[in-house]
Structure formats: C-alpha cells, structure tokens
Image (tube, rainbow, N blue to C red; front, side, top):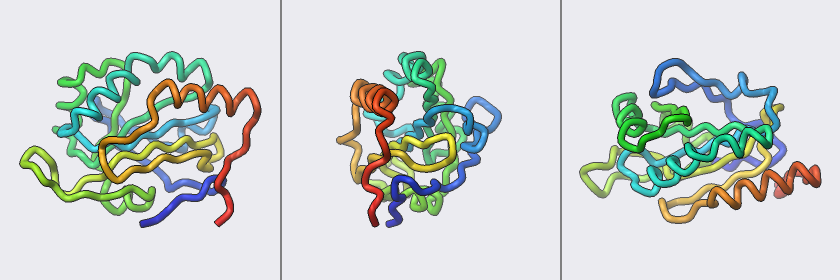
Length: 172
C-alpha cells in the first residue's frame, strides 16, 4: 500500500460528479484547504450519516477557506442513488475512482462480504490538501468504524490556521 507523506504532492484527481459535471483538484488551488474524503459507497450506513452531517455544515468549512469533496469507487448510478437516498443537497460527490487510483492515495481495498457491497471498493480516507497540492494531513482506516468526527476536523483547521501549524509526519 502506498503512503503519501505530508508535505509531498498528492496524486491528481479528475472526477466525474454524480449530479453532472466534473471536479478536479487543480481547480481548487486558490483555496486554503481542500478536504477530500473517500467514502465506502452507497452500501455504507456510516458513510450516509457522516456525509449528511457534512452536507449540513459545509458553510462552517467555507468560513475557514476550506472546501469539502467526497468520492468513491461507486458507479454513476450508485453515486446518484446516494445523493438522493442520503438527502445530500449541498455536497458534491464524485464517482468511478479506480482501485489503482484509490491505492495511489494509500487507501485500503476490501472485497465484498455482503450482496449489497460492490467488489472491490475502498475503505475510508480523509485528506487535507494545501492549495499547492501538498498533503497537510491524512487519516486512513481499514474498516468503516473509525473516522475523525466533524468537530475534530473543524478544530484541526482552526488550530492549523491560527498557529500556522506545519505539516507533521514528514520524515520518511
């Protein structure tokens, strides 16, 4: 599994959006931070709850000069279904990330253990990226259970901005 080291460039992202159009990380270069969350997919109730909370709180991120983008290995149909069933009104979600792209971001890959799960899919990962495309912080897990909560994410951004806190974990 690849690991992206803080302070180094993250892989390029050029993603199709479930609601139509496309999103690229390069287009976000003028913002203070881009928060990218890879989610498991339509089959994951934890992802649904988490992305709905974020959908309701995007303005708080914007106040810190940050944008949030979620994406998965799901198909277009499954991503559109997620938007509708989860009631996401503000959050754009991307779809169709390949397993190789997920691995390039250091994500764990799982096989399905239930009929509703696609095969294969990526496990969750959260990445905070600076405008120059360098990784500031990452959180990757191998299962759906542990993820930083939204309040902790906001605390991280506030502290980082207030103190101009450098990326940590940069020694290889």
